[in-house]
Image: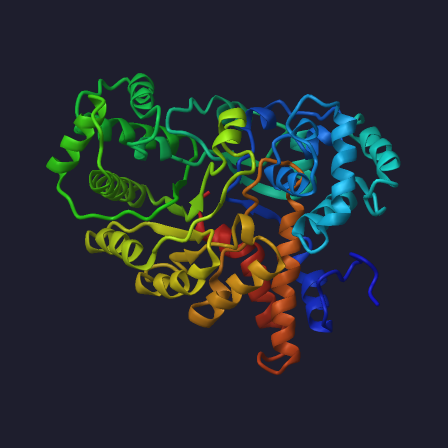
Length: 465
């Protein structure tokens, strides 16, 4: 019987052990998509206790606590931090089988050298051990990033953002990690969402372009793309909860935009046309500047109306969407390809039913650079052992696993970089199994190249950072 989460955790073969400890373990991290707060990075935010570092804003843990019957007062409510920590500690043993069980203990081990199993009995001593370290030096946000060997962080930023803190971070002489913005124009695409017109007015202000028609709107978006580019941005990101594609003309899109500004109702058909034209316009801008375009597809958000009204978005009430993907996504990418304007693109789906759809679809548009169109790493509900392995197997079966750009954090927590270790162990485990079963040669030079590529080098070459 193996030791719980020992040095060979998740590694079942001698080849996997060699690959991980020799080639993968100490590689730097390029975190090309996350939700870290640049202001907190600039200020080197410190944490008064483990609850603040662990539980503030972590909807993964909140969902588990709710499932364990914990009252909302001890999750997002006004209870004391120690009470919330105890509630989480009592929940942890119930998370066996969930990646939270592994992530929790990886974070305790790697950041705080705490190897005790967290439960209601060990909670008081772990609270003291960890908080003592957090109160000392070298546990601020920047310190945790550097401790994790991170080279690049790409935050997720609205086009109307001033990027003030990205600029300040760049001027810091003692912090050499690149903290770059990502362009996330979701609010400019969701023409039927509350607040759309207000957002357009804010775009008008920051771009200093008077927006009276669709041409003005597109011009304002283009100016913000240029502003982001000048401040180091090389990545865009779109949350496409439902894939919508409908052929349209600029005249039609302009009429729809004008209706929205006038407060008129936009039909679903009109929304499809507006989004299609705007996405194609944006894709062309990204291609022109050499950016990478990301599509995060098939999240079903804010499903609990009562809790959304009480707590707002990103509080643990999202789930997997099951819409159709193959036809609209192929059509959208094909439209850009026909105009020689398809940028490097990463496609993620929250629904694992789409693994083989995306795995085969990316092969339709490859060329020019290795792995130009990427099947993004297992995301959100899928970033666990089975989800990661199934995504990698689908990619390997249908495309070039060796050109995969690997893991990202997609997190608001500065302690989440251990997820890269979790991922790297699984990459080595998968390759190790193939070798031990005689499906792949025991060619260490080749295996080293593949492991180092997936875990670090492919992403470094793919992005223009």
